[in-house]
Image (cartoon, rainbow, N blue to C red; front, side):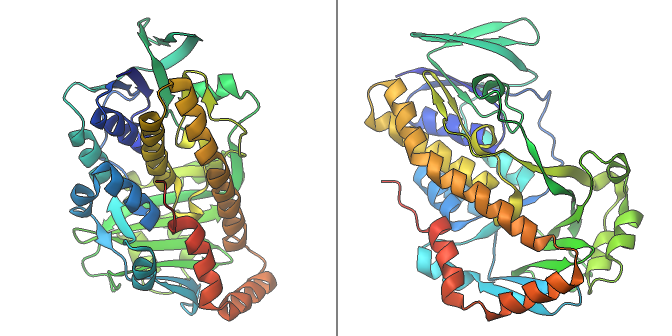
Length: 382
């Protein structure tokens, strides 16, 4: 059994640490944050991600905190359906559900699954050196540690990717996003249906969560790192979406300025390599994608299972890492490209192009839509 260092305590890092511990490896996970905040938003866990979690033995616990979706509808700003997906039909076709979960609840389940003492907080990695026998990692506080290998799950701004693939920089998608979680009490929604509303002022998503909560997000075209957008509050967002269909204005008003989470939407251009001898990139550090397919967290979950499986079937660690790379490069690269395209279509502002887009979407047969789901969900790693 090997000694692993996992850098990054997000979903990918936590899943990987668990998968490695399952197989008897010694794992320490280092997270730069001084503590895990309960603040967060919701996320979708697609059928493919649930399959990976099932393989890892985590699905049952996660389902206790999840909401199963029955339908996903894309609407115009007036509330007219443009296209819809029957999630129950998708679930029947691919053998598992599509669910939503609060990010904080997911983090808690994953952390609780690890052995006590696995996670070390407030440890920011600043450098690393590898040789044929292992990797030495240096932290901001001056400490160094050595292990057989490093799984770099340190996000889109990964120090490891910055060193190993210097020209791979985060790229701005052209729109910025605000997110919040609010109580669903008194708001007229069907809590089995997720919706996105596409209009000329921006895109607005409504996602039901377990426990009587709604996760919502608002995406608007803006300049990168726009200081005005960073200062927007509930009243500003209400002014943008005031003419959108009910209950969007009411949902925005249910939030508080301090509960808003704001960030520019970023991804990275697909890179040609994830495995670098005894260092391997995982999750957003390897293939950060825009959120338009709901696959960011899901691909990190897939990574964790595939990496663990490759270590099972390859006696040599370097070979196992290359096997993981060959299994993940093409799929994650395609998802980055697909998600970017969906975002460009969803964020149209020209009203003539919007009418054309909506008309085309209404003509797309369900069988064609199912093709996309086949690529995302119909996957078997064994």
